[in-house]
Image (tube, rainbow, N blue to C red; front, side, top):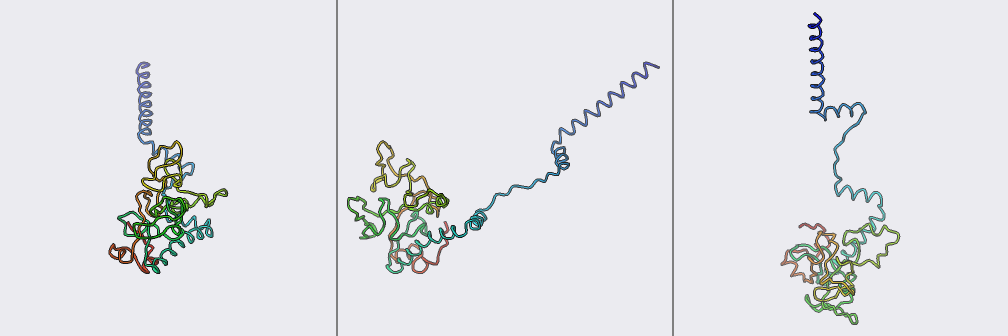
Length: 245
């Protein structure tokens, strides 16, 4: 009898241990289930992370700095509006874009800057392929637009820095020297002593199309040239702000 009772007790303990092992295995196979119980007890709530859209970011920027933001955008496009109106009056359309685009990334006006560091009004427009600089000792033979404001390369935030000087800002090459440190002719090699840069390669992107400076060209076109090329001319240059690739 004693032996039989002992065997029954051992058998009962084995069954109990088996049940405990089974339960432990079940919880290990479903860690999410166990975790959700713990989160439920602590009152956690899980929400999916949804990236903000660009339009939403712009709205936030407008709300936070409405006056400054509006003034910057107005100033940025005022140059283009003036250039478009001048083109209608003179019949000469000057734009900066990638050659295959049907729209201009930027419309060029008298205050636009050339790679040589001088403004368009300091150049003489002889023909569509001859616009030399008439500043003394400048070797520039053809106006070649270069961004002169941080907004033109998408760096709007720079103007919010207390120490930022917009007049001192210059577009830079990957060699970390400005366009004014490079030759105004040829492939624009760097003239900075000790620099091995053989041609200007922008360290920035166009704010209108996200392509590099060297992929763009400056075009001097007549109304008829624009019409044949399927590009905006006349009042369309002022009203048509929609740029599509």
